[in-house]
Length: 481
Picture 1 (cartoon, rainbow, N blue to C red):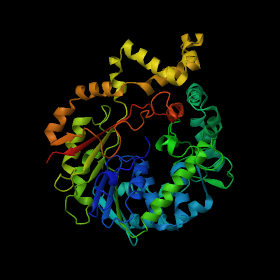
Picture 2 (picture 1 turned 180 degrees about the vertical axis):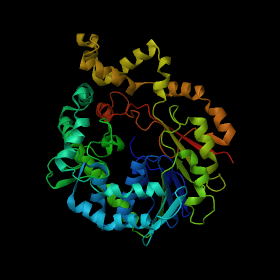
Picture 3 (picture 1 turned 180 degrees about the horizontal axis):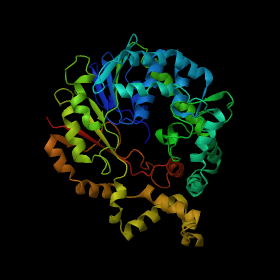
Picture 4 (picture 1 turned 120 degrees about the vertical axis):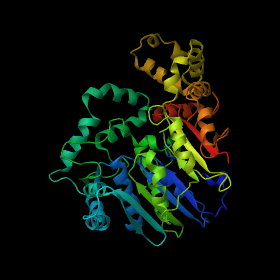
């Protein structure tokens, strides 16, 4: 999902809000939502902002810690570029890794040395501080010991070997059909940029010299035969295409080049913000999200004080395939501030797979409506071609994928909501489901322009190329009391 600002403070507390803010990212994935939210704080904000960032995946947690430490302690001019390539690129410039090994790695090694004789079964906390920013890391001893290898290239792993390891996944011949289907959804002029990314894995403009990136990114490579991601992993899906495509330089079809400039802009703003004098505190954990209520006090600056949050962002753990809505609300409702503390306090849940689970409720009439709507984007001739009767024809496959972009999502989600007993789940925990979202749109990827309006076809093509379906739904909740 594209990055979101979980505060949207102008539309909620207001730009003059000066009380402390506590934000919980319960299953953070990467830190794009953290970056966008911190960056969006009003310039005049005089309170303290505390971001608690949790993910149970050690790869995610380790990279989060490294990137925040880099933002805090690397030279302000170097930090954004280094973080960007740690985050997205297969290879680093050797000088980038040398900086991380001379500045960040000793901070981690020092903790590992100090806890060597301590208990294995408790969390060991370390707080790293600068003038206006702090990072508190809470990990058990075994997990602390896992961190140093993320800044050390495996012995004997050359750049050429690392490249071949990645290509075995990204260019696997058995996945040729999957790759071709993906390419077919892209405008032809974008396909070169995509294939260069698939072949090389460097988030840089097409024109930039590749040979300078000569060191395998150790946060990706743990050994001599392991690439940690699926071939479907794509950095484009983490940021809104409309925010960067065609907006950086003359190479308007270099979509990964434009993403490079877009992400770098946000990282520059983030690094400047945590050095600006605004009090920013980060706490990072590597726990199952269900344990967060009992660990709340561990993240508090006043040890033993339970922390309640102005925003709780749960990613998609409320989906049926993960915790489900009842378990998610039971877990996090008590952690949300009451309306007397902050009437804008919001719990944010994301449903990515909900509509897929109720597709059996689609009727023939729904399909006819979808095809009729697609005529305005693809044209009558497209839909009446003889080839559309061949289910293996690329045009037919694209049409099948495009139907989801013009679907009546509200009707299907109402079925999902009823089947999963949303009303009963909210009543049990003292929450209410917002009628109108105030932080992020209910359907942020749904087509906005009416058919045949100026820009409607371009919006449709952008969504088609994005890897999303328009069926991604945010639901926001607030306390009743």
